[in-house]
Image 1: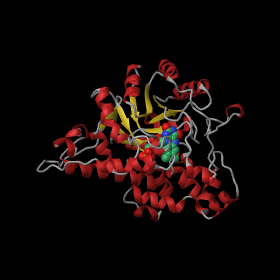
Image 2: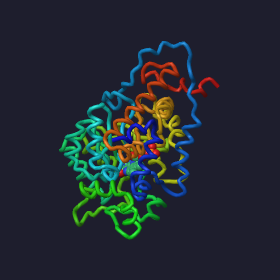
Image 3: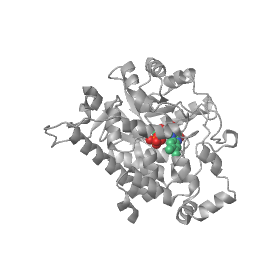
Image 4: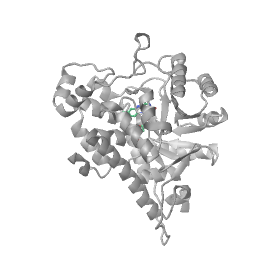
Amino acid sequence: MGNIEKIFDSNDARSLSHRRLPKLIYDFIEGATGREISSKGNLTAFDDVKLLPRALVDVSERNLTTSFMGNNYSQPFGIAPMGMCNLTYPNADILMAKAAKSRSFPHGLAAATSTGLAEVHAAGGDNSWFQLYVFVGTEKALELSQKAQSIGYKTLILTVDVPQTARRMRELRNGFQVPFNMGLSQFIDLAIHPFWSLRTLATGIPKPVLFQNEDEKFDRTAHRMGANWDFLNQLRSIWKGKIIVKGILSVEDAKRIKKLGIDGVWVSNHGGRQLDGAPAPITVLPLIRNALGKDYPIAFDSGIRDGSDIVKALASGADFTFLGRPILHALAGAGSAGLERILSIFSEDINVVMAQIGVKGIYEIDNSVLARSQE
Ligand SMILES: Cc1cc2nc3c(=O)[nH]c(=O)nc-3n(C[C@H](O)[C@H](O)[C@H](O)COP(=O)(O)O)c2cc1C
């Protein structure tokens, strides 16, 4: 696949994905809620954080290994849970799970997956974490988590920033729906992207496989309000492994989650897909770290586009980070090779940044590497 040589960063992956995907699918990935202020703000907020170059440090030996919630990983970033990934490339869920296992990092399998839980777990082992939404009532959610547990999933991500799916203008304008709604404009969009369309037809149009019964039909726009504090307590009592709560921006919420005996919080604004006007997570991360103390596990996502963003998030209080859109764009642009390429690029990037700021290992990265630490 010749495309892969054209990817040097996440922007290149996005450009390729733009060319390859029907507008409907590209906009599903890239779009956000409202005027997309939060999604753009996530990127500019990273631009505002500056790292401090350090001189004369022997950085000839560097490594990216780290640990998070009791597990060792070869790199400080994983893949965030994303629904309907197979729309970008056939078998995307499995490709991500395999990459997670072979490279040793975690990836989230979304409740809105179009690949079965057992299949993904067989490919990813303990590196595959299961992400839960409370779509069709708490009973179904508890049943799903029990199913995931019996298959062998050890880590559960409970996403709590989607009490209701937000209004995403690109999706509304394009008539994007899951399962697909085929009108004339969608038909034309697919027809002018024959590679994607034929490939997707040949492998089967992805469907949300965990919600296939008539009485629990998948409706992306349905409210997900069952995920309240009582439910979190209930989940804690039935889930034997680790639980991390994703979509936290409030210091108060983070403190309450820690108090409930949950294993970690995941600071995120869902890539700006939920509340336009929500703060960029990188700006609230230091406050949340401060409130939770230095040892409580904190994951981070939203707006990471290169290795220096990852270093900035680690320096601002995260223990581990997750990539979202860049992964889907790399898959859409160049399939499995694109995925491997973008993962290598991020690692290489972190490695080079570490040399510039004079650190040899991930554990050395704290707020002293930020330029503002010397103000
Ligand atoms: C296409 C797409 C689908 C997503 N689906 C889910 C989901 O099902 N569950 C979830 O917790 N987060 C979901 N997210 C949010 C991601 O987990 C992550 O928070 C977000 O992508 C981070 O922002 P970034 O991609 O701009 O870095 C989705 C994101 C995208 C782009």
